[in-house]
Image (tube, rainbow, N blue to C red; front, side, top):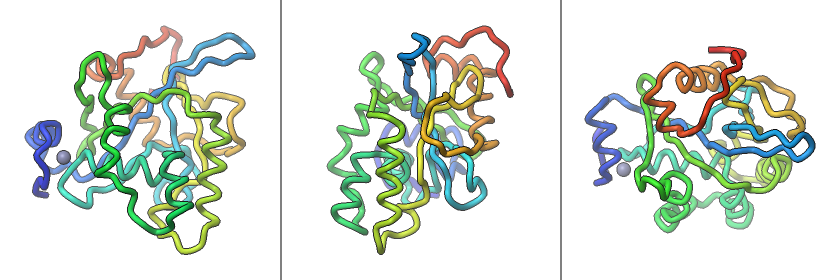
Amino acid sequence: MKLTCDHGTCKAIYKKNPRVGGTGTLLLRTYYEKATGVTYETTYGVKEDGGKYKDTINVVGGELEEGCYLECCFREYCQEFSPIAADYYLRNGNVEYEISEQWRMFNSIFKPEKTDTIQWFLKGNTVIFIGRLPSLGGREDISKKLREKKNKRGLKWCFIETSGVDLVDINTGFLIAGGPSVKCPTSSYMDEVIGMIHKEESIRDKVDIVLSRNAPRVF
Ligand SMILES: [Zn+2]
């Protein structure tokens, strides 16, 4: 792989491991459950409809097409998760989302104001980016958009690989109850990524959440 961009973040990733061939994305959200008054630290995951992790809730991500990790990260975010991008695909069909015009959106998710630095860590030959999302509406609403997109004729597979989203509690590894009835487990990959947060302090610092001291399900 050769870098095709001039991003400082991409250069740093390449320097650490030039074999990185794909990206994954932690999409963090602090979730307040009204019914119980409990706050959870979570990450969004998506229901995969094909591939190795079919019928599981998995990390958003995919393989590099061009030599830019940030673009890969954002492209996969748009194709697999983003409700705004889903609207765009529903309107415009099989047209690449205008990523170049959307870096502001990328920054709002992946560049925390506090540090102004994009946070990432390596999991083998994959770079995992850490994003933080505000409330985007219910999981049910986002899932509905992803399913509508699947029903649209003519969209390439890469745009319709997912059919739902759910929230995974980072402390326990369990799905947060009351979400869309996707009825599938987290992927082994998702479990491994969450496990890394628990095991490695340097990653925990980047994720910037306080973990509870209760014993987690996995890891
Ligand atoms: Zn780049």
